[in-house]
Length: 91
Image (cartoon, rainbow, N blue to C red):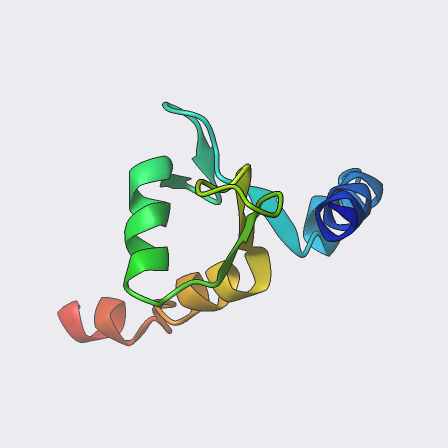
């Protein structure tokens, strides 16, 4: 499982600077990643709005871990940025 090990080692090296991270594990129940709960992230992944990777050993049916591609998650969040027009229209 060299590829999985390489991904984990890369994630560990980048772990000290969250802004530089490219991949992150799905959070545990009750925890969030960029403000999204586990179930919300799985829904975004299922709908193709956020990229992910399933790391598993050859021959295994279930993945060992699922990683979220943080740039795609941040791009999804950025697509909802309000430029302030609604606030000025209401006044």
